[in-house]
Image (cartoon, rainbow, N blue to C red; front, side):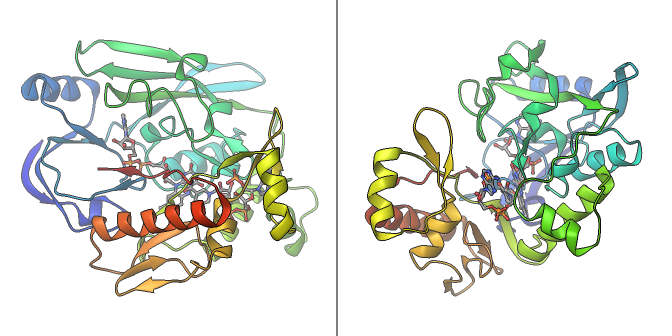
Amino acid sequence: MKEQHVALKTLNTFGIEVFANELYTFHNVDELISILKEIKDTPNLILGGGSNILFTKNCDVPLLLNRIKGISIDFEDENSITLKVGAGEVWHELVLYCIENNYAGLENLSLIPGRVGASPMQNIGAYGVEVKDLIVKVEAIDKKSLQLIYFTNSECEFAYRESVFKRKYKDKFVITHVYFKLSKNPKINTSYGAIEAELQKNGITQPTIKDVSNAVINIRQSKLPDPNIIGNAGSFFKNPTITIDLLQKIIINYPDIPHFKLEAETYKIPAGWLIENAGWKGKTYDCYGVHKNQALVLVNYGGATGKQIIDLSQAIIDDIKDKFSIELEREVNVF
Ligand code: FAD
Ligand code: NAP
């Protein structure tokens, strides 16, 4: 289906008021191939749920909206099940489907907005689980050759909020289906963040995957702005990785800086802590700003432009560099 001059306000969770000259919606691989043939080699943009994108201008290239649905069983044995999932399925609905059927693995990733097709893009992660832990393979269409290609888990080159689709093959493929291997013998992971405390608060000592999912949902609803009410795209920045030398220098002035050891003498620092300690939390400029409860989230209270948000993010990047000698990197895709 092709539409012209389409308002994108409700198609991006930041709620930025821009337009697409041409919007094509596809519901299966054949429709996608027809669209790619029609637009020939014109550069284009794929959109899922619009929850990880900041529009800084009107979309002047064809916008291709992925609505490929369907969940089917690809393989099953007594211990596991592999599901083939359409890239246009809503992520949280997939999580709920798995919980209802007692397929374990995705419960810590409850309530992440967006569609399944974007989940491998930045290897979505939360509460100690990354989607790379569950993905068996990714099916995608090569935009140029129109061939269907399968990427194994290792070929996706997953890393923290990264994959081959976000870097090396940026804009080269349309993800059409994702295969997830779920366990029938749940290994509950409650060690991260506030999950344990949330379960204890509700008197749960032997949690099921549904209990974990509910705990994650409760924590997220209490901390994060609901994009239906306040425009945002979740964490605007990635958590930086720094060397032990730099950490030791920062600790002199900030002895309580949280830090998590990675491999090879490097440490992850929560970007939210840096932004909050630099005094940005809750800062509001007219109709946009830094969220009052979560400094990692930039917000649009209504009517902000993408340029205002990007300029704010640059001011934060410059200030953090100045104060901590750490270069923050944006996580959100900027168009
Ligand atoms: P979109 O915003 O539509 O697209 C994102 C990027 O992927 C774009 O560059 C787009 O061109 C590309 N793309 C999308 N679909 C395809 C496809 N099928 N083929 C090729 N390219 C494609 N992220 C986390 O990792 N963890 C979290 O806990 C988390 N929490 C969030 C909380 C809130 C309140 C919000 C608003 C966002 C959060 N996010 C989180 C970010 C976001 O929800 C995820 O990154 C999500 O996977 C994006 O999905 P989407 O369908 O909305 O992607
Ligand atoms: P949180 O639980 O308060 O944790 C704060 C920070 O400490 C996060 O940066 C987290 O890293 C890190 N952390 C906490 N416990 C850790 C542990 N045991 N080991 C290593 N690192 C640990 O964070 P939050 O802001 O409320 O978010 C909760 C989870 O949801 C986090 O995993 C976060 O990444 C995810 N989330 C992501 C987005 C997004 O848009 N990307 C938006 C909202 C929430 P990590 O961030 O690496 O986990």
